[in-house]
Image 1 (spheres, helix red, strand yellow):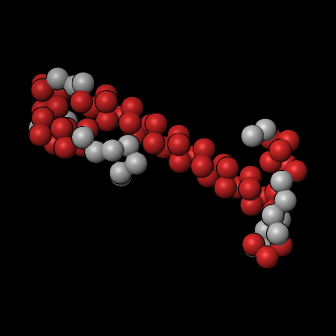
Image 2 (cartoon, helix red, strand yellow):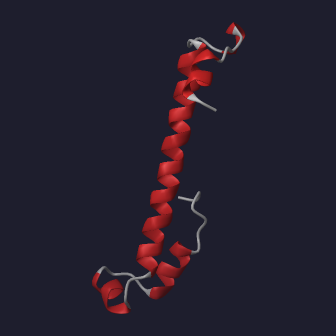
Length: 77
């Protein structure tokens, strides 16, 4: 869906107090923000899992702590 399509999309007035185009853009930006958060969370967990046991000891984590964190799905905080 192009930006032009988003700009021309109409929502019935009954659906909220915001202007329809503002609501769609806001939801789109929130969606992009969420996707970005998920990608960052996934990347961080992979990096954490790649640390050596010595590095984990330095930051006060055990391999079991890391495994538990790395096994979480990306959408789980």
